Structures are given as C-alpha cells and as structure tokens.
Amino acid sequence: MSDRVAVTMNGGVADVRMVRADKMNALDDEMFVALIETGERLKQDKSVRAIVLSGEGRAFCAGLDTSNFGKMASGAPRGNTSLEAQKRTPGGANRAQQAVMVWREQPAPVIAAVHGVAYGGGFQLTLGADMRFVTPDVKLSILEIKWGLVPDMAGIALLRGMVRDDVMRELTYTGRIFSGEEAQDLGIATRVCADPRAEALALAAEIAGKNPHAVRGAKRLINAMADSDQHAILKQETEEQVALIGSPNQVEAVMANMQKRAPNFADVA
Image (cartoon, rainbow, N blue to C red; front, side, top):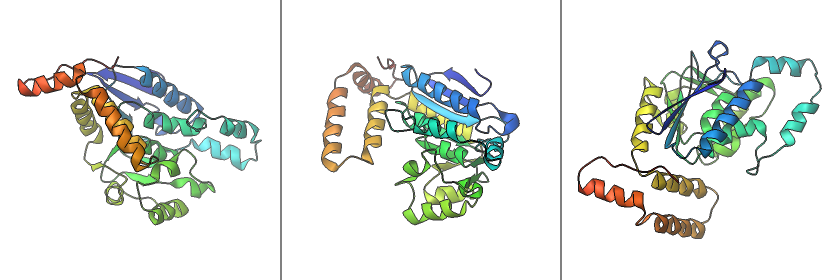
C-alpha cells in the first residue's frame, strides 16, 4: 500500500483502490507513478485472475490535480512536460497515457467501479478497463476542453469503436457532464448499479473461478479485434484454442462440469 494506491488480493482478485480521498483521487505526479507501478507489478503476477479498479472517498477520480493548471496559467516552462510526453513505451504511450494503458495491457480482465465523478483524466482512466460499472448519478466528462486542452491520456484511442464518431466529437468539443445512465445508453458504461464496487468484485470473483488460461486467451483475442483483419483474427482464434485443448486447466474445466463440482484451476505458469 502506498499513499496513492492500495491493493488487496483475495481469491485471485486484485482490489485496486486509489486512496487520495482528500483530493478526490486527483492525478498528481505521485498518482501517475503509483498507477503505473501498480499496474506493471500486477501484469507480472501470475496469480491475478481479475482486477477491480476504484477510488476511495467521494469520487473515482476528479482528473488532473488543479495545481497543474495553475502552473500552465503562470506561463511556467513546458520543457519537462514536453520531454515526458516524448518518452514512449513499446506500445506507444507516454507516461500519462501509460497510467491508463497499463490497465488495458493487463493479461487479466479489469473492471472499473466508478462513483462520484470521473472527469478528464479520471474519465480516461475508466476507459483503460475492460468494463465500467457506474452509479446512475455519477458525473462523467471529457473535461479537457474546459482548460483549453485535448484529451491526451489515451482517451481517443480507447473510445474508438466504443461510441459513434459524432458522439465522441460532441462530448470532446463541449466537455459536457453526463450521467451513468446516459453513459450506458452511449455504450460507455457496462452496467449501472447502486454499488459498483460490490458488483464489480462479485463479477471479478466469478471470472476468477474460470480457467485463467482461457480468460487471458479471450482477452488477447478481443484486444486484437479492433486492429486486426479477419484473416488474422481467425488464425489467432485457432491458435488460442489449440493451445487450450487438452491443457490441464481445460481438462479440469471439463471434469468439474461432468462431476458437478467447483473447479480447481492452477495459476498461469
């Protein structure tokens, strides 16, 4: 546990919580570092079968710490910011983008449990998850235009294919606030619920009870779907299935169903 992000493991589920509650989990330098380091660590943990990402206190994440905007308004030199923006991961992300992309890159599924507000960078952080569970009255916004900026934490890359082109433009150009119920109508929210974290943890536990090799294989296929052509996807489907058939965890799935008992899957090697 750090002073920005805490992780609790239970039955293969990583419960990841932003814990800067006094600042509505706003994104400062330490939060960026904590999100990336936590995500990179979880990527290497073979026991992780599902992840829930949430925020403590009144909000999921209020976006970029407002002190950063004060620096911009003061005309402070942009050299360090520009330098940071130029450094790229193998996947093409700079540091701010990697705080979001590290969750999309997780081998295990990630569910964002969103309440209160998720503005700007906080909203983009939700997009890194596989699914988004939200309260009906949560306040969401691509807020960057308010500050004279564009979304630059992988939001455009991740919204591609999630919503219609004209909807993305309207939300980005106006920065208007929309609810969890509208987010579900638009295709952004997966589920609207009174207690997103409780429902996300329950679903994560259900996923953790499936063959982890099959779940990870399914995520690889779905991730490849957006950028691969039909031939590549069909080939990858076959490759994933061949690797699974007859493997110990796949055999265990079959035996558990035939014997009407709970499966006992081994962690990914």
